[in-house]
Length: 64
Image (cartoon, rainbow, N blue to C red; front, top):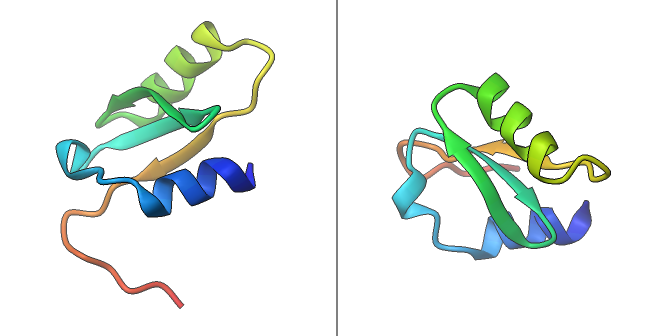
């Protein structure tokens, strides 16, 4: 899961602003506005994996 989080932090996700993304094996495997659909699609593609789900913020965000 840490590799997926590192991928999320380090990758340019500007194509997905305002959407949820599912990351498996350092790859975006699904993206949509509906988190349930993103999860469902990711689990269909990778049934044995646990995807990282994250929302790409609309504006730059500072997280402490």
